[in-house]
Image (cartoon, rainbow over all chains, first blue to last red; front, side, top):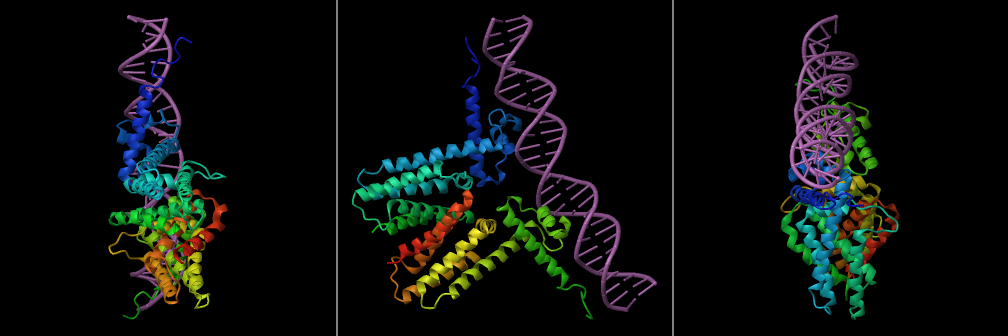
Amino acid sequence: MTSQRVRNPWGQGERLRLEILDSAARLLSELGGEQGLTIRGVARAAGIAPASIYQHFADKAALVKGLIEFDYQQLSTAMAEADGQCPADAVLDRVKAQMRAYCLFAMAHPGHYRLMLNNRPVTTPPSGPLVDIVKMLIDAFERCERAGVRLRVPARRAAIIVFVGAHGRVALLHASENTAQEPSILDFVDELVWLVTE
Amino acid sequence: MTSQRVRNPWGQGERLRLEILDSAARLLSELGGEQGLTIRGVARAAGIAPASIYQHFADKAALVKGLIEFDYQQLSTAMAEADGQCPADAVLDRVKAQMRAYCLFAMAHPGHYRLMLNNRPVTTPPSGPLVDIVKMLIDAFERCERAGVRLRVPARRAAIIVFVGAHGRVALLHASENTAQEPSILDFVDELVWLVTE
DNA sequence: CAAGTCAGTGAACGATCGTTTGGTGACTGG
DNA sequence: CCAGTCACCAAACGATCGTTCACTGACTTG
């Protein structure tokens, strides 16, 4: 075992893999939907031949899967960062900050958001990155309860209501592609949070 | 002007037009999404040649537009009927009945619902059949106010919150194609209505 | 330097799509 | 019966798609 595959075990090959994912992400942002997200288009955006994609991804589904995983990573870190930038004892602000980060991501990357939310795997019990995000929100609401904030519904319900409402609002924005109403979205989620608290 | 177009002025031709729309609707229900909603597929479902579609619709966009209009007609009548079947003074029940009808339609016809909501025209000020539906809901909440029901937000906000929340819930159901959670959707909208009332 | 490995490629395959075109057959009014 | 109209269709066109395959050229190893 002197050196199995010394040549490019994880060096240049992985770099191009990431470059493909990056080009795909850029293309998805430009198109605003997965309609034009095609192997040939990604190859064109990355400056390589379509066939070269298959050196790094088994098929188109694998590429999309990789893209979605990458996006979820970005979204959850954005939410966690927004949470961390609040004073630890400002429990309600932390909830709002998380949801604001969620909506900001959705508004900044519509194509990615739609791709992520419309291609969720069907699992029982529900699992996957989206469920983890909801769990983050449930935790945030439970912190509120422990801090003495009165909720009109259990923390779990509050989290689901706020999350589902935010998704509905963002989805409606995306469907009409009307960017004029973007500011009101953040107010909308704040209103949702206010509704579930007393 | 003895008889311009005595032959089939509105008889058989219009019938086939509706038959095409009906086949398209059936196909859309089977596919569950507009991915496979194709001119050739509709023609196959209707038992005619693809070229024949163009005798009744200018192009695919016109066909889809006709389909969407037909669906909105069905949805708003379903909501109005649900409203009419409640006692006139049961104002809150009437709101809930309307939203239940909305969700039932969305659950019964996922492909149609997605087609309708994801292809809204971008107009300023907002208009179209969806806005009319929201207006129905605003009216229903204003009836509640006049009947003495205390709302925690203005009627217009309450309607928007409940509608957006319901859409978010339904959209999440559709995205995961998990039919097991359907019953909980009606409870969810009831909870939303409860949240905006005192 | 010779042999071998492998990322990357050009070209093609088969499928599907929206749409157009030219023709055919059934039915019409005269 | 004749000429005309019109719904309908088979066939084709051009485009785009995902994917495969034989090949090439640069690089590594010995």
